[in-house]
Image (tube, rainbow, N blue to C red; front, side):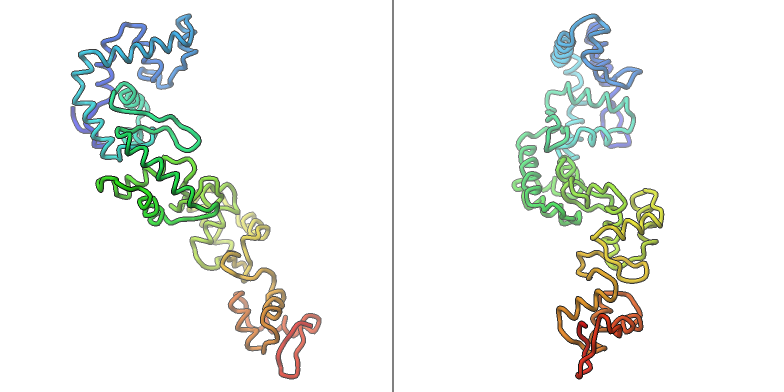
Length: 346
């Protein structure tokens, strides 16, 4: 065998071909059809194969199981020990516990090769599969105890997450490793931990590489407002709506019309207009409303203030000219000046 570009010493197609040679024609055709090992890459169902041969789906299942057992007992299977050992070593290198599609993508991008590799995992006695459930995706492992630890650590990690948490990847990896005890240092690297994190259906990563609960709009963004929120949060300071639209297109590869983006920002209470076209996040502590509203809230909170104090406070909330503040402050319908030259609410 020669090592391919993925670093694995197994040629799945060749190994599968030799293993299938031990089967009778119908049994071989059932396996080829079930796993998409022939010219047709699509895997056939038990029912469709049964119709082809005029037998029940249960009979097809029996033929499949019988064929796999025959292969495992054959001399050809014994001869392929080196191939299965190489595949086992490769999976161990990837983390010993890995999502099904993840490992297939690592082996090859070719669908036929992936189908053949999956067949080797199925027929190989040392490879164990856990089917997809509410918590985790389809995954394979070669170390049952390690798989249990990874599953339990993912559960603990999820239970400690709040619904709207957005966690930088480095922090997420550290938090996960804090839950994962008695694991070989060989596995404690970012690549392996990312693969383990990706096993969870309840924990996810957004397009910015941040982690949190999969159901959160911060992780599974579904609309322009969610994209805008992540863009502004990543920017870290007020940003013009035109730039928000541009960033959405660059980061999420979604068409973002400037006017539509602006309208979504106006409608959503997560965003605060703090200047001409400039938006910030409400969670940053900015007061909502126009300049007049901001002045009113400041005076309600702090009591009468001098002109200079009002200007100072408002400029921390809004990117506006001092004259704009003064024009609003001098409106007698809303504000009044006392004998100490301090302004209060009219």
